[in-house]
Image (cartoon, rainbow, N blue to C red; front, top):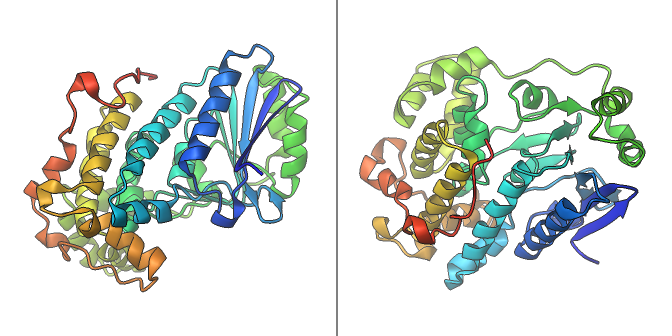
Length: 367
């Protein structure tokens, strides 16, 4: 059976990610299937809206998408396989397509929504979470940065929450996701099948029908936010990763100690890159940010300016430690936040391609 199930019910295009054993981790064939499906429905006058969900081992819902298939990335890094080049170019093109989609697109973000899962949901016109949702951009834990448009949507979070999420990879529940602008409504997880079926009977282009549908299936009460925006802004507004960590370590509160510990476990180099990424992206369009991220990802996989091959990258070491060997003891280079220099960070933002031949040159502004 296909890893991406596409069908039209009434005038609703329905997509189910169907790779539950990996929490619907995205492969290149899945990205291509999603893109072809969305492009076909974009031009089909018989389809007036799209709904997207994941599946778990028991059936639909329960998990949305855990991100890209990082075992595939690791194997490519170990063998020198250039296949990830196409993966990232086509994934970012899909992200842009979703953000610019001309028809209502509803993302049922139940369960795990991380990395690439955020990339295929943040551009939806309705981003629906449940009490089981866990949203995160945890890339610095595996030696990467929050891509798939992460620079764009994280930098639009209120205050300096984008920096906090990018550096720490903290998971958000429904209330925090809604409060930080990364989700729109919370649905009752027990009624997701009924909500999915009911979408076929309404016109999502009709605001009143959509509002009535949301009123029927939304949670009656949404829990209060748990993240402390005041503390986040006070720390993550500082000018460098070192300044942020030192301020947290000088704070005796439990939140500060926990956050500092999180940061000391992430890749020092990629936290510096991620901080610069978020701050640059704040003034960029989505298309500009995705082109910048494509440049950055090339340098993550081929960090020639650091004198390293693909087997010695931060991402190969991060995936080895967390997924392959599972020793949870990555040997980052540099090992300390304080030892990262500007000369190590700046080349990540140099494009390997001239503008006329950039792999994402065809992307146009959507904002």
